Image (cartoon, rainbow, N blue to C red; front, side):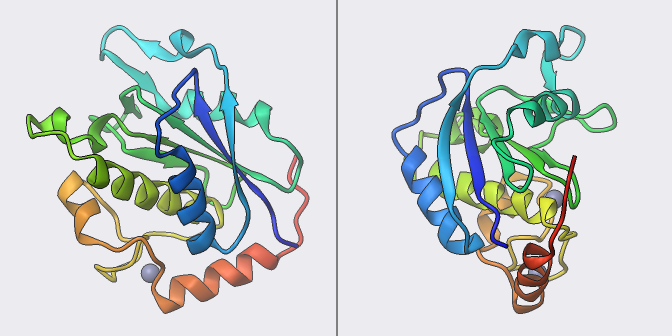
Length: 184
Ligand SMILES: [Zn+2]
Ligand SMILES: [Zn+2]
């Protein structure tokens, strides 16, 4: 069974390139990706201490919006995300679970004091979406530097890898994606 992926742009985030991210990630993931507008109560996930939003809690909240029990949901937000043990995260996913989340906050050149680069932002966002959805299909980090499942600590790491899966991640994705599952 081929599960559909809902790409949810959170709270009015409507970049002109939304369609490109959906299209390109659908191509790489080999399944339909549908763009959806989503309203969430983001302020409740804000940590005043850190000036950031708690990715784990947003992800848990996101699951309520899943369209059907077989679909995957991936949220896209502009806000800066953290998990308690890390300074920040580009994204977060439930390994082999339905949900994942990506922030474009630190994918923008402007964040690093560099000139705006539209194409770079789109490219990085596609890679992060594919990477997090890969986790939700049960893929772990890959040693192959070119594979989209290679871990990225800095934005430069995102630039170095491709948006595609290496052959072994690709075959795992196919295998795991075909597995019949009933998730609550
Ligand atoms: Zn990862
Ligand atoms: Zn790989």
